[in-house]
Length: 219
Image (cartoon, rainbow, N blue to C red; front, side, top):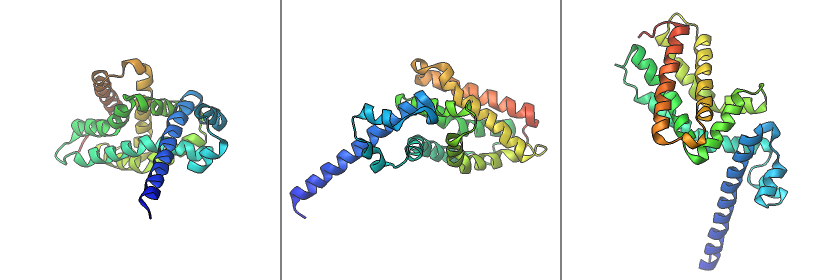
């Protein structure tokens, strides 16, 4: 292949990458503003100034766009959750272990939510938390399920008298608090110091909630 052809192909690849990134950025804003059900691919296309075929070329359906928006944030969050879970030493027990697990699960989301781009993702998750179960809820559940299961299984030995279903129920309550915390704070107050305090508060609140509903943390 000639050098000119290689350069042209590289330019084309870069343009496609830029278009895809811009699509995700605009789509995230629309889903955050209008919800999955209320957002319109046509409105996204109009804002971008692209023809209808562009979104279908890069993603496919509206559900595919939504899943791609979620994945660009959630993949990193889930990876960090697993890393922090693995980093909890076996010697950490009782309430300290409970707080470490809560911090490991909650803080990656809150840290992402404190960034300008991540705030739209935070709004999307908050909307899912307060919406009647729909296709968007199912997509989130599928995406977070494997890591949520790992944390529920790690929490269960701390509460031997609580059924696993109760662990999942209280963890869902903790996620609700996590999802709404950035929205209550507001975008303008999400600096690093304020978010660090919000994480500490969330860990204390959800850990106390677990012990209130499942008994004192043991093991």
